[in-house]
Amino acid sequence: MSELIQVNQLSKTYKVPEREGGFRSAVRGFFKRKYRDVNAVQQVTFTICQGEIVGFLGPNGAGKTTTLKMLSGLLHPTGGSASVLGYTPWERKRGYLQAMTLVMGQRNRLSWDIPAADSFLLNQAIYRIPQAEYARTLKELDELLDLSPIMRKPVRNLSLGERMKCELAAALLHRPQVLFLDEPTIGLDITAQARIRSFLQEYNRRTGATILLTSHYMADVTALCERIIIIHQGRLKYDGAISELTHRIAPFKLIGVALGDPCPCDLTPYGKPVAGENGDGKQFVQVPAGEVASITSRLLAELPIHDLTIEDPPIEDVIERAFQE
Image 1: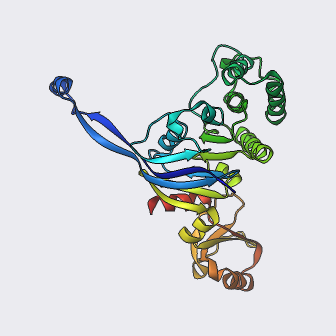
Image 2: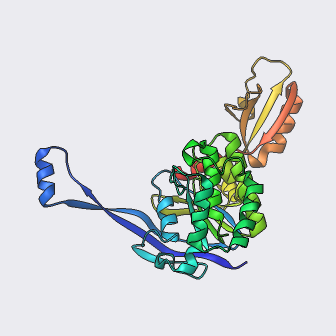
């Protein structure tokens, strides 16, 4: 597969004004302002191939949104280079703007007081989409997102989930080849999140679009992405498969047991007891991945096991460990 996105030593530094509190400091700062450098992104390098869905992860303030803004052409970098579809993003050439889209879950692109259908028509005019192509794309998006019942309502009257569906549709009317998605499911309930994830999977399958996704919901990442990029304090910390990260960061399994006797049992001889969160009454023990078979055999032989499961550690724990390292 061809490399659609190429990022090489990309950096962004902001000059941030600062001063102490108080009237004197305010007056002094008016005549002579002090600044400090904030390195939002530091020498980040990665490539993404055509058709990939890649999770772009990091704690708040790690530099994820800044990177997406540079790749979408909203910000100029301080250093380094990037190429998306053969274009330099911050040159904002018309061909590039017609081939990509940026969706930010905390920003609106729809006009608040008019129906979403009118905003769609505005986007048709902006991107100069022929009527036949516009009608065909809108019909396809309607099939995937069930837009018909909500397109004619003023946007202010839509629920958050309905508005997010319309936001995605508006961003995809021109059939972009590259999608930069910054927390597209933020604030949505579980059902709405699942619908958005299903839509993105199907859109990727139908169009072969390349997607770079940031999200704090690990369900989005595990459902959509086989590969993740982790950025922390502006620096790239990991680029690879989720399974490889789990093997490296958390090389253990969780064995859950439900006993015939409902009384709790001390599982310390078998591994490290950990709290379970699935509410089914199981007790969990953490064991090294290479010892799962032997410890499972011991549990079955020595305890009145009613049910037994072997699970990977939660992806949230793996990502948190990666941030800490």
